[in-house]
Amino acid sequence: MDSRRDKRFFSKKKVCRFCAEPIDMDYKNIDLLSRFITDRKKIVPRRNSGLCAYHQRQLATTIKRARYMAFLPYTVLH
Amino acid sequence: MAETPNHYETLYVTRPDLKEEDLAKIQQKLLDSISSNEGEVIKADKWAERELAYEVQDHKRGIYYILVFKALPEASKEVEKHLHFYNTDILRFMTLKITEEAANKNKGQQEEKTQKTETAAAAPPQSEPEPTPPAVSAEETVAETATEVPIATEEGGAQ
Image (cartoon, rainbow over all chains, first blue to last red; front, side, top):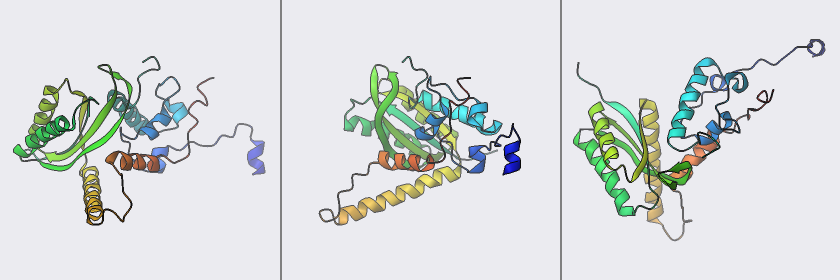
C-alpha cells in the first residue's frame, strides 16, 4: 500500500467491462447503452468508456441501431 | 449448396393510434408470410408502448412489436416486404440475424409466459391480478443486466 502511495503516477488499470463480465450487448437494452452516451448524446470515446477495441466497435454499432429504432436520440436538438 | 435456415429477430414500431385489430392484422400478415415459407415462429409479441426518443412522422409515441423466427433468408425478405408495404402504419423496423442461443432464450421465456397465463386463468379471482405485459419483463431484464458499476462517462470529457 505504502509503496503504491509513493508512486506519483500510479493509475488503476482499466479493464473492459464487457470482457470482465459477459453481458449481451442488445440494442433494446437502453439502460445499459445510455451509460455510454454523453450529455450531448454522443457515443463516449474509448479513452473514457474503458472498453477494449472489439467491444467499443460493438457498442458503437449497437447504439446506432438503438438510435434508428428511436430508443436513443441522435442529438439534443430533436 | 442448399441454404440453411437462420434465426432472425424483427422489431417494428407502429403508430400509437392504430386499433387493436389493425395491429393484429399486421402481425398475422407477417406470421403468415413466415409460415408460408416454411419458417418457424419462436416469439411474436407486443413488446412495449413507449415514448420515442425523437419524433417519427410527427408521432411522439410508438408501439413496439417483436418477432423472433427461424427461417430461410427468403422468408425474412418476405417479412421485410410486408413491413415496407405498411409504411404508413409502421414507423420503423429492423431485422437482425441472431444466434440460435439468443433465439432459444426467447423460446424459454415464451413458454414460461404461457404457463403463467394458464395458471392465472385457472384461478383468476383469488390470485393477484398479474398485469405483466411483455414490456415489464423486458425492462426488468434490462435493469438486471445494467446494475453494474456506473462508468463516469464525463470524467475526462471536460478536459
